[in-house]
Structure formats: C-alpha cells, structure tokens
Length: 441
Ligand code: GLY
Image (cartoon, rainbow, N blue to C red; front, side, top):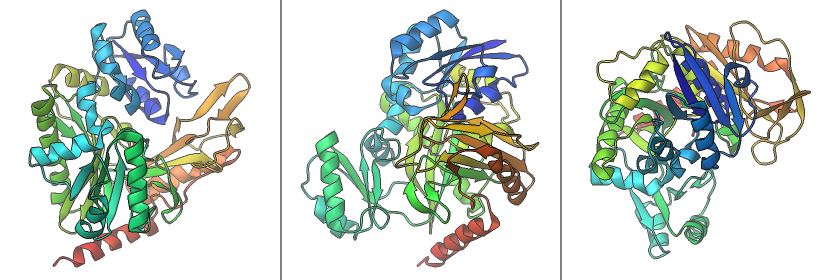
C-alpha cells in the first residue's frame, strides 16, 4: 500500500487520483490543492487547501502526511522547484525537477535543445533580446507566416499566431516588443500548417514509454472558432493513433521524445522524470514540434488514464527508480472522447461564484470535476473549465455519444462544444491533412 501526495485540484488531478487508486497493491491519495474539488474530496484520505506556490505549506503538509512519493499535476509548481524541495525532505516525485522542467517553462530552452542536439522537429526560429532584426525576420525569413511566443509560463496565453491573432507584420512586431518589455526576450518562429496532436510519454530518465496520441480542441466554439482556451475537449482512437496520421508520424514523434529525454540529461546533468508531453503537428512532410509540457495534458489525461491497464502506481514508482525498462505498459484498445462544460463567457469573461446543479449522470459516463468549488450548500463555478465528461467505446462515434449524453444533466450557466469527436469534424481534419499532403512538391 502506497501513500501518494498529489498536488493540484483540477479534472486532471481527479483522474490521476482515480487511476492511482486502482492499484492492485492498494493506494491512498493525499491532496494539496487550491480549492476543494468535489471529485477528489471523497477519494482522498487528507486534503489541504492552499496556494500552490506556498511551498512551505506544501512541505508542512508532506511532513505531516508522510507520503511514499508525490506527483505534481500542474506546471507552475514544477517550474518553481516543488519537486526539488520535496526531495530535500525525503519525498521523491514522479514529476520533473526544476532544471528539466525548463522544457515547458522556457520556450527557448526547448527550441535551443532541439537545435543543439540535432533533434528533428524545430521550425525556423530566433530568440530576440532586443528588437534588432525582428521586422526583417518576420517579413523576409518567415514570409509573414509567424508565431510569437512569450518566454515563460503563460498558460497558453503567450502564444500569438499570424492569421489567427495577429494580422500584419506591424502587429507581430508590436506584440514581440511587448513581450520583450515584459520578459526581456521573445521567440519568433515559423508557423506550421497541419493537424496538431499530443503524444505524452512516461519517462524515467533513460527509458520512454508513449501513451495513445490525443487531439485537443483549443478554440472555445464549434468549428474551431472563438478565443483560445485551456482545451474544450479531446479524443483518442482505438488504434492509439490519430485518423490523420501515418504510422511513421507517430513513431517520429515518439523518437523525438526519446531524443529529448536523452538531450535534457546531457544538457542539465539531471534525469527527466515524469510525464513528457510533446505537442506535435503533422505537416506535409512529417512531424514538427510545437512545444513541450512537463506534466499530463488537461484534458488529455482524461483520455489516456481511464484506458490505462497497467498499474499506474507501479509506473510512477518505476519512473522514480529508473526502472521503466522492460515494463509492459498497456492501454485498452478503446476510443475515448472528453467534453468539458465551461462557464458562460469562458475564457474571457467567465461567470463565477454561481451555483450549478448536477443531476443523474447516465451510466457509462466518467465524470471529472475541475474548476468547481464544493461548498456546504452545493457546487459553485470557479470561473474556468468546470466538469469533464468522458465516453469510452469501440469507436469514436459511440464514445462521443456517451460523453454527450451527460452534458444535459448539468443545470446552470454553462456551455460546451458540440462538435468534438463527431464524424463531421474529424472528417474535416482528415480532409485538411490530405490537402496539406497533396501539396508535396
Ligand atoms: N491540453 C493542453 C495542455 O494541457 O496544456
């Protein structure tokens, strides 16, 4: 029986806890989160509410609960060094140390690493410390097809893409200058055309085992319209690939994760341990890297963990011990669809502090709570993604129908994307990828 300290309180952490608790040898989860998650509360044996950047409070909670190991859900505590700090008090984590967490917390670290170790997947890119050459790079080198990335953790809000958020060279230069003012550096890179997917891997420092690929949906509204969000929902397929990928694409993405784990160690002298989340894009002639995250994706965790058939607690222990090699990690051959209910006005002006009622959830649907606060008289919207419903089935259509069947059971000011996991939207993505590949010169 292992006691695990889980840091975080969203739907991702809810599914992490649920999966740990399926361990054959028994597991107990103690949670440090910034709010009372109604899904995590009843399945945890201790629950402390506090600021996730209050490392002293987390340390006191760890000293008091004496966990066998820890796992960190969100990126900010990893970037701040919580894993290093827990190690000082004798608690090891299945999450990365601060030095290796730079893969997510510094956009330029990841790009420079790929360039230095000759790992494929980088776009044309340049890190600027002042505005010198900025306009020329955007206009001439990238022919106006560019992405401006603020350095550091910005919860997805620091990335602006030409054609989507920025429409002229002037706008690109102005946003890059704003980033320079705020962070002292900014990265500008080539914009890729294709279909994005996430490939998350378990990494013990030297060995890398990949999970099924997942596609998230960033835009708030149907048809990929509206502002970018943390992710409105996601799907994975029974064959563990994506309908628009070639077999070699998936292998290439896995190989990049393998090469990056090795390069991180060579560069920092510290083993990367935990979940490595590669945000990839399939383009006309292969796979490219968009960015790295150093933790489970949210919502992607809700696609892969419910179909994990290997003991997750044993995987976490193997990550910590460097013993993933030879471990056969299995996922059920099921399609999954995750749909998030979010508050009206999300993401720009979300309704918060308003009560919602959750009625009967149809059988077969998995429910994960996110930004909802459990108070004495019920559940209140926290202002971000509220509840995720997951359907699992032999095919995507059925999985999507299962997830959708639960969405009407919530009463309150919330909405969701109707098109995630539907035949129509996936067909459009396959068609788009076909057009992109048809352009091969
Ligand atoms: N699905 C996007 C993220 O977890 O960052």
